[in-house]
Length: 171
Image (cartoon, rainbow, N blue to C red; front, side, top):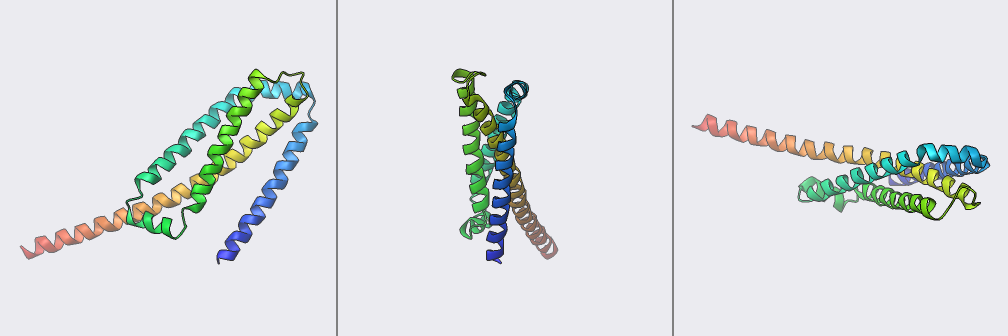
């Protein structure tokens, strides 16, 4: 079962890599005026969405750290079920930092006439896409973790309710 999981991840990674290369190639083929207008329209949106996602991922990590005293979370961590969440979180945060660095590099050092501009913008769009995909994976993982925690809380509440019933019946 574990081997199938890794095979699936490798296949998804290869497909994603091919799609990223194709997107990068397409973006490079744009002429400078088209790419410039696209960048001018989207540059503030990209940085806003990136920082928003950065905050959400950081909040998710903080929530998980707060839940580390939960017995089920300890078991999940011990048996490496949280590794995907941590991996995608680190990837997403790193890609966000790259987007911010590229954004400020474009503002201060690269002008529209520079030949690096086209590559810089293409890299920024590709990194944004990868960051967004990793954010979707993080969201899936955090929803799964929250379901596990809520099942744990519900089972503890049922045990408390049954204990209360036993106490009340014995009075």
